[in-house]
Length: 527
Image (cartoon, rainbow, N blue to C red; front, side):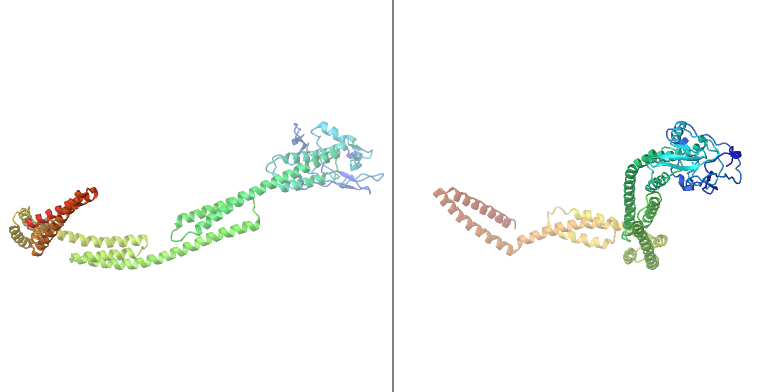
């Protein structure tokens, strides 16, 4: 840069530095990834003033050269992160390229002034920084005043300082990742090794070193949180897999396929949501869980297809059987053999239940035909029974009058006359004919009651007049009389001896025998 070019703006991305051979080289521009934690000094903590807007860029000569009367130390080019605009996102930031931007003034004049005290500028424009290891050349700015030469390197120091401050702040963030901690710490360590900057670099390195144990603690905390999140995600995934396995392991004869299929779809959505929003599990573990989940879904689909294939076959077989039953039922619907056909319909109904179910549509249609055939037959039978009952109504009146005549025989006064009258009533009863079905049991029960009463009375008379029965009764009376005589003698002896116990026993036995004798004699008199 010549004296005539002194008014040309000097940018932080394009600076001519003099090499030992007198040539100039361009400082390296920052790469896209170097500003992961870079914050503009205006946005750094403690800075309340916005950064001054840069003036419109001025043209830079295509080539500039400065003759070097004597060789000067040449600093290594140091990449510097370009501050990202606050509204910029990683996808919207264009790749860095050389730009002609004037060096803005530091936002904090006090910090800039303090940082400038750690540097100096030679007469030939070489800029030095003082460190604990000694003085080190960081660059060259020929043809400019000392303050202008220091401004660029002070600004770089303030940028490094801002990066450290931002990293220090980010260590308390909840969304800080382990990779970000490691990468940022390594990058700042590299940038602070021998930066082309002027300021209290030793203090800045000490501040960064003080952050290392904090970063380790934060790293351990993040690592623990990530492990806990992975454990929780593993639990959720395992519960999803186990739920799917329970569904797939249900007995195909008891499972409800439609709700179960819907539950599996919900579980799949939950798996995808957990995979999308949750932490990433270890690949072998995740693959193992997915294989189990996939196997459960495959098993469910296979069993469902097998079940419905068998169901379709059973439905087809049931339809064939029921077609035959319907044909038989329809053939019997016009029969007038009421008893036999009613029994046949009962057998057809049992066969229908044993045939199983066809498909709902076929089963309903076949049942409608079967039921219609039944209804036709039984309606015809009921109509015939109604006509018959009308015809038998007169017979019922006759039997009602016969019942009244038979019931007048009770209670019995003359058994022989009652028996003769009952036989005449029974003969007329049989000749009266049938009665309506609804009245058969009623009138038959009334006649049986009269018959039973007369038969019981006749049996009782025969029993009493039976010679064998009478002989047994007389023999029993004689035995009781002999027993009574013996007991009277025992009672007298007990009373004479004064034995109260024997007296009581003899009296009880004597009373019992006398009671039995009275019953036997009464039965003999009645006969």
